[in-house]
Image (cartoon, rainbow, N blue to C red; front, side, top):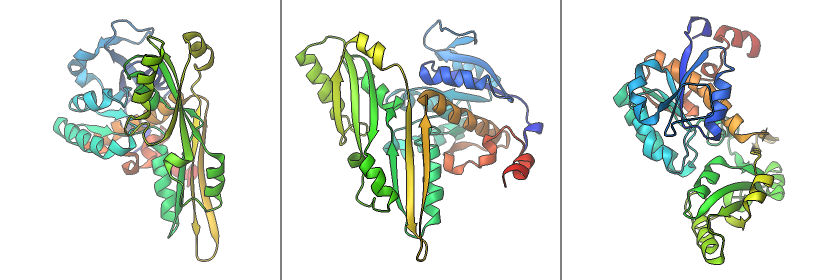
Amino acid sequence: MTTSSTPTIRAAIVGYGNLGRSVEKLIRSQPDMELVGIFSRRPELDTDTPVFPAASAADHAGEIDVLFLCLGSATDIPEQATGYARHFTTVDTYDNHQLVPDHYAAMGEAARAGGNVAVVSTGWDPGLFSLNRTVADALFPDAQQNTFWGKGLSQGHSDAVRRVPGVKRGVQYTIPSEEAIAEAKAGRGAEITGASAHVRECFVVAEEPGAASEEAIREAITTMPDYFAPYTTTVHFITEHEFERDHQGMPHGGHVITSGDLGGSRSSVEFALELGSNPDFTAASQVAYGRAAARLRAEGRTGAFTVLEVAPYLLSPVPLEELIRRDV
């Protein structure tokens, strides 16, 4: 498949938070995409893109080649994504690692029922890190592999914090252990776990500041399964002024480090990201996989796909023949 024979991809967005705004910006910079609308529960958005009620999305199914689900992973995607997949080819950035298999199965069933494609978990982890873990692991007969996240702000975990009753505003930072990174690079990472290699740090503005309210919020956050338990989690309560002053940026990053013995010689592979803006980079990955989703559907494919199942050339606006000349 080459872009020269592919018509312009008609794209739309559902959800207009940080990720949705970044996806909007990046779609506009693509040579082969046209943004036709945003679906939102809010009647007015600060954008010149046409805005439609989220409840009316199905009425526009024939006008859209790929729908970007820019929704939170804590509750919105589990509750809403399959409904959209029945009417549209979709791409999401669902990031609850433990529940990705369930999400994949549910989206596959919904997408097949509607004759659509659903590419799931297309952020950077899960997403690009998943792809790099698979490739690097395949290189070594007995690979030692470790993944580190941060230091940076996690959108999915921050969304989970903000949904805790009593939280007015909140963010969560993931912080890796430099000692654990050094051990992994030296091939001594066998005992490192995600929980032991990181801590989670939350900054919260409470709706009603006070000891009782704050203790309830702290307990709800630190015991939240899948997101915070069993990590060491610290919750700081701050003022709204402090939140505005200190927590508006969204940096992130991380490492996938794989090492192993190759018949007497030891080698290692490292994939690292340093992100100035988590939403912008997550959006960049989602938009690239949106192109792939539209192409898969144009080929007559249906059902759910992970990043492990999508050929890399489908992500690029550059024709396959040119990619082979340039990069192979």
